[in-house]
Figure 1 (spheres, one colour):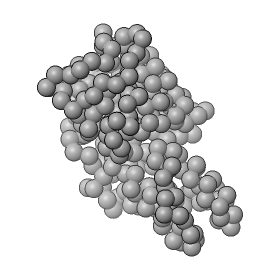
Figure 2: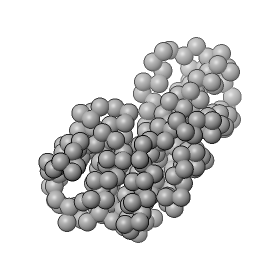
Figure 3: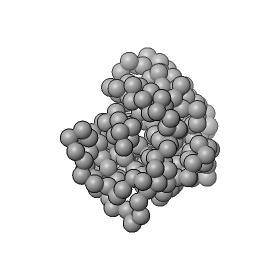
Length: 241
């Protein structure tokens, strides 16, 4: 059984235990990973894609337009832009154009989006018998393109993308469905996330939550059961637990 979060020894240095659970978790058998900012360093490419759209349509966006964007689906930003600039094309057309730009940027920057040691850590988990799934607020095309560009597609036979369940993150639907597709109860799964939206999603699904401070501070992820400085550190902790 996995106990309530505890202080870790030197072999797991860098993890901070934050949240407390009322009940111990089941043994971890599945690992459910977020994509953008967790498995791949791609948030900056999402922002770049929208900035290219803004340039094409001569949109005067405020400097902080992306302040509330991280972790949210592209449809959120598309709807926000269309309210502000009603002359834009329809939502489906705008999103298709934006996705094509983003996927091109992924191919051009494949070496830059790879977080250190993540591929090796995923291989260790897979070889040890852990079941792996991806849960993302990105659509399926962008998920597959990002994983392929980072050389990680082979590790995720199960991908739950935005639009495949009723509600995206922070609702728990994505991770509940991911665990279901792996044939596991959520309590037997660990969720690895870089945002507060994702931590809330995993926690409400009933999973052990591991925050990774790749896009924000460790303190901001205090609602997670454990917080790590990198994704590889979180994955390696699972392998050793």
